Length: 179
Image (cartoon, rainbow, N blue to C red; front, top):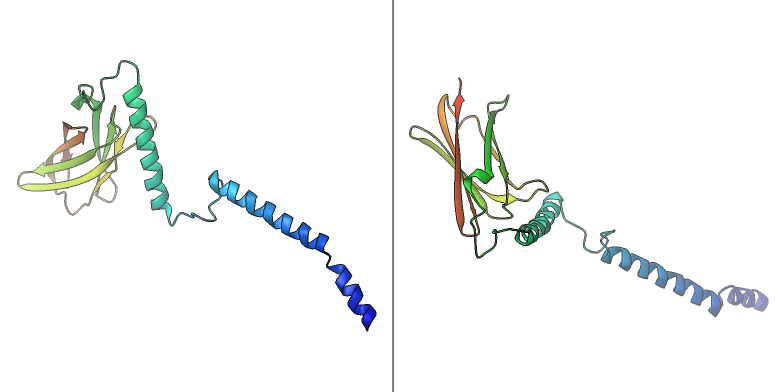
């Protein structure tokens, strides 16, 4: 019986314990490095897609703002807002198959701010405010999709007001809605 105990003790040697601990340490260092580089999300795992989009939007908005402010011959800074004009706003509308109205926007030279949409037909008015969202080729308003029960038949005046860096610009269009 004594000889069996000696054989078991020889299987687990200090050298083997040291090798196992060293391997575990190497794996921990690799995991921390991958997490720090943003390759994995073991520790700071995003909760949902909205959290990721908000984080990406924040980074993209900051990057675009830096790009716009540092562009050659640029007057779009906190001191001068002459380059933000109504002509930098493109506005279009489309009636979808389900009757809703989709308003699309393109904003040149805008890196942040807010968009206020107002549509009117006589005394009927609908208003919605959303943030400016950065995209690589141009910024845009976060999006407008007006429910079909809000828009009845007739001529609608569509107005978009964009506010950014203490500058407010408005672009308008009309849309005929058929029954």
